[in-house]
Image (cartoon, rainbow, N blue to C red; front, top):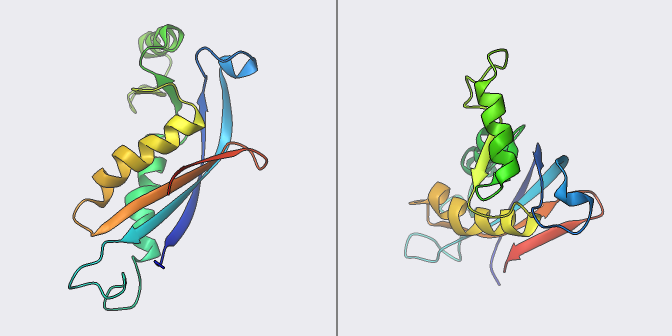
Length: 157
């Protein structure tokens, strides 16, 4: 048995699923709830997966390393696949418009995958978790993303 720390964070962002057979191929957005599950690596300094205080990781650390990454990178942005020609055109229009504030490098975030909830969860576990938790002895073991209260996906163990 292992201890796990779980924390969720809510973000709002848009996307479109390229190639979707229904309305999800259109531009739309969600109020996502992203659940992070973390575990510690066992070592001489960590007894039973817990630190000297008796915890896996402080919830504030999960917030600062993972939740704030979401807040700074995906919240109130449009997540677009870098192979999506429509999104590239829209991003260019936004960038070229003089009446739009582009001080935040515009509203589009281009990612190397079609932005399904499944791919987003996998990216958070496989890429962002290791990057953000590097050197902490903590592993992001799974992510669950709720697109709505009725629909969610999980990736990890």
